[in-house]
Length: 124
Image (tube, rainbow, N blue to C red; front, side, top):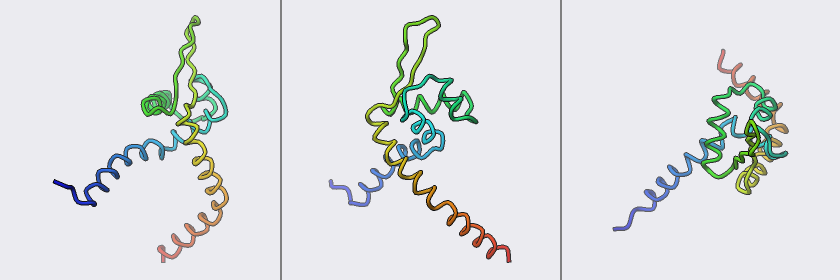
């Protein structure tokens, strides 16, 4: 039995929702942008981003690794050194994120003014 077209859209939307949840997260955006510059070790990522907890960084890196956007390489040193890098898929994500950041920066003042106006109208 064929499914109605709307059921197919709903299923696709549900699948996409999980992906959009991870790539829309502020920590994911920051990690991807930091790693787009070069591969880095855990503490270097943490220091560069600032404000992210060790637990959140670990959780986000694992999610990105699971989705194939970040690779994790353990170097056989004492103590072992772990390096994180964007995969090809991760680099393909960094481009639209950079564009989105450029858009946000270009429109930041207008959005701030709109918020002030909106909030002022609602306060009356």
